[in-house]
Image (cartoon, rainbow, N blue to C red):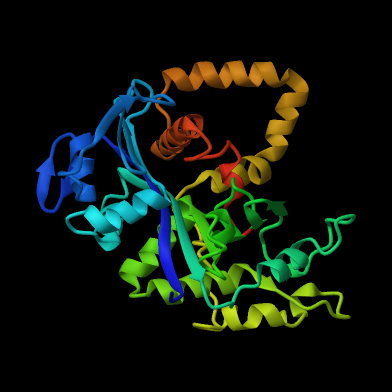
Length: 354
């Protein structure tokens, strides 16, 4: 078998308001339109009870469409690894590009929430045992590790299903999962080597990945390694106190450089429009002294009551109103579950830390 890169998870939300699909204007999008978007009109969908705030769910072989909610103004689609394989086999268009273009051109209503891009190695480029040893070289001191990454959390799991390495938090926008796929599938007898290196992207990072594919003419193969080389390097311990200057580990060189040595960040700098960080800066640095003095004189309750009474009756500046609307929309998604937005700390992910 040849080494390959594949999409192994895709989830997104889509609001139920007016949308333009393929030049056809639909006043209100519903679950049937999403079935058409997937190109899976002719498969036998199963109607199931809804979960997590949704009343209904359509399911077919690893693909779920959650819809009909009194809580959320959107639908939620999730495709597992099996669901992705089904999409590639049975969809009438079988095109991720078709889907990605929809997300990009309808970003006001469609939000990609998770995209997993996986590399399957069948020829021995990835040494799962050397990788695990670099992640936890000393079980008595897990603060030691031989890799360089903005992703801070890391773990190694060993079980009868093989070895699995996680670098990064499942709550962050980028996470790496490297594991023995042959052992996990119980195929060690028939496949001598099958190790998967998976990049899990969420929210803004997932959006930027598909934007680069569709608008910057990147290929999946090249972009996968550009991202990998930017966010993860296994290194040989050296004398330099700066780990980032250590040489690449011998077991990592062949894999990391198999397509390109270059790297690329998926971080997108916030634009100049008014955002929450600008509000924070103004309150804390421009009017911080006045706010502090008011609090010392009158207390927090007086401040909250006065402003709440005033601005629930008065008209807010549009830029403040937009911020409130955006925060409320994000909090609604947060309440769905960790699969879409993990917790209220999403604002922590405004840089490349994961």
